[in-house]
Every structure is written in structure tokens, then in C-alpha cells.
Picture 1 (tube, one colour):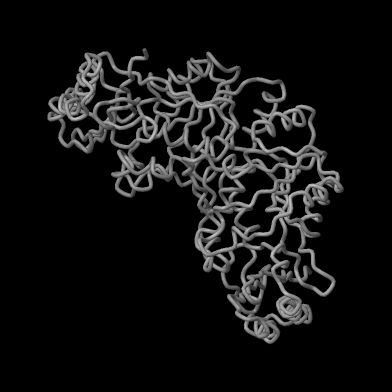
Picture 2 (cartoon, each protein chain N blue to C red):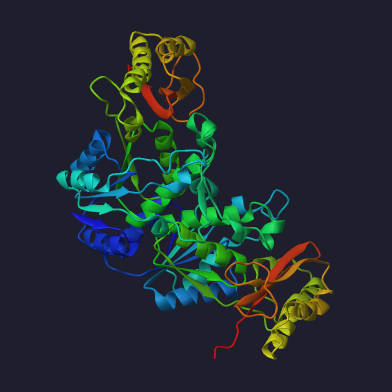
Length: 283
Length: 283
């Protein structure tokens, strides 16, 4: 595995892969890798000849009062994990390599960035879309892999790829969970033992609503109520919404289109997100 | 020459060029080609193996009260001109191919889009940056060619390429002028014979200032005053500014850095732009 920090060197190496017709898979991350990331890497390894993993804690997607400075980092451990997964290239640019001093061009998503997390984290998805676009142009992968846990991010990235004609296939990989159901997240490490137990309310609430849905419940308010019973246990529920999977607009009862039940909640000072996808049975 | 309207087909054809290591040159235009465009094509032909010309009158760069609907079009003539220049591919997507119905992701330029034309055409450079980014991703050229007449556009496109890490070289080609000095523009065809004479005030003013500069004048206000004398003849001077070539901020006296004197003026109901570059002698 090669660890690379410069865009120029990255391009030089990938040029060789491309000219020998190798499929390039790409997994963009902010590091502090967990099993969710490893599932993305495994998906890339299964579909592509070469996997590039990027580690970059992107400042433009953090708000002024968010956790940029304390975001967990452990580069040597990440490097070891990538090596163990057979990753070909670990790309870890520093902030200056990614954002030169007079940087000023952003990729601005539209309505998809307005609800859910977008309503509480102004500018977040502008930062996400911009860095993902930049990384796509640096790596020029054939396929890029994203985790379903970041449901709104997935929708925005897919839309960006279509809207800006990026010649890249996007693959969404199901959320990986701890044995007790908690969605894997680098931010889980912020949780105390007690908070860790409390945080289970999120996955339990969503999972209970999913069960109801699978039992035939199609009424939006009822499904939300089922989840809410559990979610009372968090310190602050930021949102709990059932949205259309494509438009991210509030879903209508009875559910007739692919939808997702999405939540963001604070446990102590830690903000966690999770979602379940409600797929209607095909006839 | 092949005339192509679909992105998928364009990619299929260009894939072949790329795999045989041909350099791809790209000239994006809004059609109604004139000698300025032909100079861009010639520059591409000189540097690249394959030249792609696009013709697309981009709706997102026109304001609600601008000339989108009456923008001059003559596709058959353009096609003939491109064929005569040895262009390999003429790419002419329709509006729906370029902008699917749920399009919503824009490329947003920063401070470079604020002065000059940006101050009078809100949203214009957002539309320009977005379509240029899209076309770049459709064509994936090695080199793209732009005319110096659109001075601010050139600065914004160059900045976008750096900021979004687009793997493309940008070449700026000097403005081509009519024999009497009027900068070539598709919009010149809006001018009546009388207006055509009146429009000369723009290039004459800029050229007079350039002469003064070459004679040693380095004072911003004095250079502007020289140009203004001629520019009184237009119906409405929108702006006349001497700016730093890189930042587009107002230049300071005495001039010490590469600068440009830029003007936008109405002759009748036609808005025309032009500029001259003030290059300091190297020692």
C-alpha cells in the first residue's frame, strides 16, 4: 500500500492504473475508521481492481460551533486497517493541499440540502459536495462508495454526480451496526458508557418503526410515533422525519414510494444520526 | 466531423480517442461563430490531436431580462465553419440533455464573480461556472480554450479549475478584433450601422489608454480618464475599471502588477464588453 499526500503524485500513480485498464474504486472518509468504512472498502475490493481510500477531515463541512478540532483521529491505526484490507492507495492530503489559500469556488447543492441535517447544519452539505467533487476530480474513480448511514449525503452526492455530469458510478453500502444495533460512527467514541446505552434508543426506535412498516403499517404519523416512543430516551431529538428517498420531502400517507425514516439526536453533547429505509414490497 | 447531441455518445467516441493517447482540445461556445471562435479552434488544432467544439446557449447564465431568447443562432453555418476548420466533434446538446428536469447543483464562484460584469449580472457567473464544469466533465479534455474578451469569465474558470481540481489546462487566446478595432462578438449582429460606428468608442477608448500605458503612464485615474474621453460616445457606460489581473480588485496607482482595463457599455439596447491587458515590461 502506498500512502500519498500530494495530488500530483496521486495522479501520476493512478494514471498508470488507468492506462492498464484497471477499474478504480474510491472510498472517501474522514478517518478514524470503523467496520462501516471497512464494509465500503470491501465493496470496492469486490468490484474494482484498485481501491483508493482518502482520509481528510474536511474543514468546510463543519460549522463554527461543531467538532472539527476534536474530531477523532488515529492515522497510524487507519493506515494499518487499510493495509490489512488490501487497499492500494491511502490518500491523505493536508488542509493546504486540499484548499489553497485563495480557494473560493464551492459546489452548492439545492433543495436536497435543505431538510433533515441541512436545516440544522447550515453550509454542511455545501462543504460535503465541494470536497467530494474535489476528491472525485483528484482520484477520477470509476466507482465511489458511500455508507447509507449518511442518507442525505448519499442523495446529495448522487444528485451532484448527475447534475455536474461526473463520469462516476455511486454505490451505497448498507449501514453497519454494533451487535446491539447502534450505527457505526467515528463519533461513537465520544460516548461515555452510560451515553452509549442511552444512544441505543435511536436504532431501537428506527428498528421498531421498520418492524411496524414490515407488518403493513403505511401511515406516516403512526410509524413516526412508534419510533418516538424509544427516542424519548435521548437528551435532545433534533429531527425524526419520514421522507421520500429521492426528493427527501416529507412522505405522504399511505406510503407508496421508497421512503426513509431519518433521525438526528443528541446524547450528552454528541450528535448522532441514523436511518432505516422503508422499501415497499414489489408485486 | 461528427455532430453529436448526446453525452453518452460523446463519451463513447472520446473514450476511443483517449485510449489511443490522443490529446483532446475543447472549445466551448454559444454558437453563432465568428473569427474569435475560429482563433480558439485554431489554437486547439495547433496543440491537440482532436478538437471538440460545443455549441450550447446556456440558459442558466442569462438573467430574466437578458437576451436568451433572441441570442443569435445559425447552427448550419456554425457546422460548416467547424467542418472547414477540421473540427473532429461538434457537440450540441439540447437544453434537456444539459439540464435534466430536477437539476439543482450549481458551481458557485466566489469574490472573482462580484465586480465588473458580476455586479450587473447577478447569477451570470454561477451559470457560467456550472455549465463550464458540466461540459468539462462531459468532454474531459486535456486542454480547454477561452477568449480573452471574456476576461472575468477566464479568471473565474481558471480559479474553478484549480479550486475543484479539474485535471484540465486552460489556455486563454487573445481577443480577435474587426479591422477597425471592435472586439468580435456574436452580439455585434444586434447593432445597426449607426450603432456599429458608435460601438467603436469602446475599443478606441481602451486602445488609447493602452497607448498611454505603453508610453509610461502608471496612474490608474489618468488611464481611466483617457479611455473615458472616447467612451462618452456610448449610450450608457456600465463600468470602466482598471483591475488586478488575478484578483479582479481595483488596481492601485502606480501600477505594479499585471492589470486589465475592462469596460461594459450599452450601444442602443446592445450590451458589449471589451478589455485590454496592461503588461508591465519585464526588466
